[in-house]
Image (cartoon, rainbow, N blue to C red):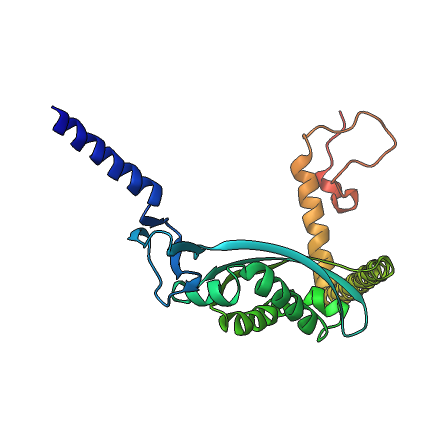
Length: 273
């Protein structure tokens, strides 16, 4: 019984010693591990999972290789010497095989030591190539040139640019007022041009209508002949006869419609009784 108790106590002591010494280290998902032996980093990159380390002598350091987001802002000068305040957002990650160099050379702080200064330098360099107005109208081109400059510099340190966007460009109050005035003037100019085009179209339509009417009248004059006039007269009389109800007017002193008394022969007159 005493031996069993001694063995149990020994086993508990060993477990407690292991827990205190902790010869194991874990690397969580989205990280890579770098082991240092008395402060010196090894060249081996450890993947996710459980790893053995020598207690006291070694220590596991975690380097994040998942995508990280950074935001920043700063001032730069455009080609026409306008002050431009730029706000950007960037997504980046550390190349897994470069975890050791990032830990050793950048102190495991790539954002402070590389990302921020690289973004500032790239934004200033690219902004200086464009005028303030071009920064607005060629925004996609400005963004692409900044990304190209960033990728070249960050790749040397094992950093990859995943996404980059220009959140906003801000200019001085004077420049904003000038842009607003120019926009208003352009809109008024466009409206005047549209009005002029509308007036020209309406004038051409009126000329076309007048020409068509004149041609129609000329054609009608050519077609009006004595025979046509007599035909129209006969047609009018025919329509009047069709509408007559057959009753003569009761009032005297007027001509009887549709009867030409001059054509009645004397021998056809009714006899007197």
